[in-house]
Length: 456
Image 1 (cartoon, rainbow, N blue to C red):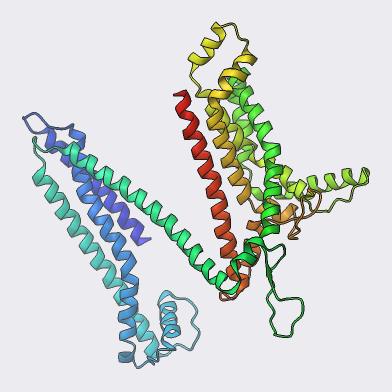
Image 2 (cartoon, rainbow, N blue to C red; image 1 turned 180 degrees about the horizontal axis):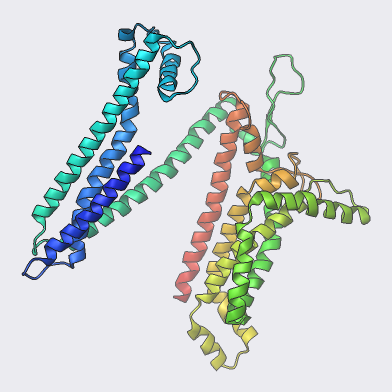
């Protein structure tokens, strides 16, 4: 809370610096190189950027430094400094200083260590306030001296903005790289225990590990084919529902609906995108699955109470707004000149849509559909509630199946040892899912770029 207050004060100081810098630029009688607002932004950046970077670094380092100093002072307070027990002791000292419950009886020595910890935290905070204040004043003084009519403030500000954008892009790339590497390293540990061929081509998934050497039926089977089959089956059913419905609704809204109907229908359709997936899961488990089972039994079919068809249909309903919204934007973006040229040649509206508008929008539509497939592949909640957990290798949509994401959740629920093939298999499944969705996204980007050039 104190840090947020300090950040607010820094931002307020940068606003004041902006006004002062702008006022100084306007007070000059000479012609300014840049607009007055850029001189204000120049001063504000010199106040905000160094201080916020200092705050960020201080917050990252200060707890470790204070903890280290507290540990070093434990012996001075007559407390044990055994390496094995010092971790628990320092936690008790922190809890005592914060007013929380501790795991041992509070002694005067421990109270003294907690008071020392509080003093260090207080000293560190006020030191940070002093450093931030000094740095803000130095930054403002530097900017104030350099503000003059000849200063190219716009170039300095734009250079700073480019730096922010580059930093944001770098953070995004490094975050993605870190996620991929964490999946890769843990997957390598898994493949050191289970052959990669067994994982990629195995036809049985039963990740139970024997607790005893003589235990029967729990040797573990890590074949990912049933999970991949179940994932693709449910995704195919979902896209069979979502693709035509979403495309038809997009064509109607973009080409046939009036302005008033479009303003009403599009928000109403996109409300479906805001419904939590757990609600879709309840709808699938309590309404759709029993209805499908009852209808199948009336036809003499053997339908499981939890089936891929129920999960796929409801997942398709969930994806309809995604497909519809993307397709509507793409169709609307087709240049009106193409339509008018088609009408000028005597084509009807339906002929114009089929032979001009739809082919022109096809790259974007295909890209949107492939992105929808990626979303269907990653959906978990509906599958858990409507399709079951059985890793059956089947193409029958009336049977229970499971998906990769569901098994990842199942493997990581509860207290699991992190050094067993069962737990590590979740990372291998995550890596496989990442590669599958990456392939879909790459294909979508390739389609969009390849055919966009044809119509530009």
